[in-house]
Image 1: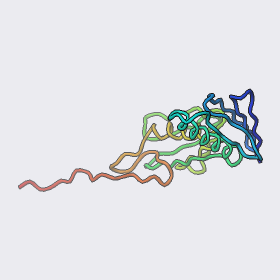
Image 2: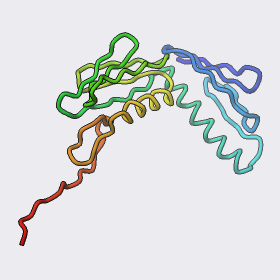
Image 3: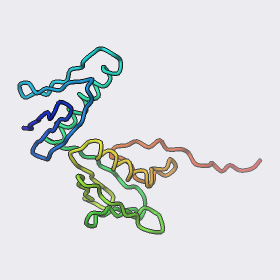
Image 4: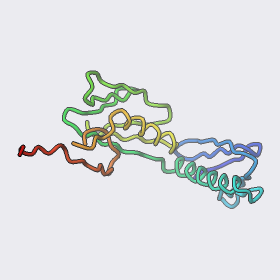
Amino acid sequence: MSSSSIDGGTRVAIEGPKGKLDFDFREEVSIAVEDDQVVVTRSDDEAFSRSYHGTVRSLLANMVQGVTEGFARRLEIVGVGYNAEVKGKKLVLQIGFCHPVEMAIPQGLEVEAPSPTNITISGIDKQLVGEFAAVVRRIRPPEPYKGKGIRYENEHIIRKAGKAFTSGE
């Protein structure tokens, strides 16, 4: 069960069992709470208002889901000697560089390494979870020849054939 409040007409605060999220919106839409539902209406039928209406509705739905259930992204590490571990407030990656890569975990996120080759990033803000997962993946994206690198769980990597050596004529 989550509760929401509208402050001053341009700010929405949604609170649930996992935490609290705020959102500032523009005057093109109005937001009201009716019968335990958040209702978004637009002021006119202009193209921008229609698109912004859908964006706000989607953001509010994600906020409600975040404070009630939360979001998680899982990453897999593929490669001999590649691993990850969480040390305090840092994610430490050994992924083929001459030094370990240390990343500060943003506030509001929970990062776990249940095994050396798996990383789970979870939190209530969908955008923050996805962005941090993308930043971690960008450090060593999967390469197309052997598939080594950091990938999302169940991500399919299109493999390329390597150079084929043929005998000279």
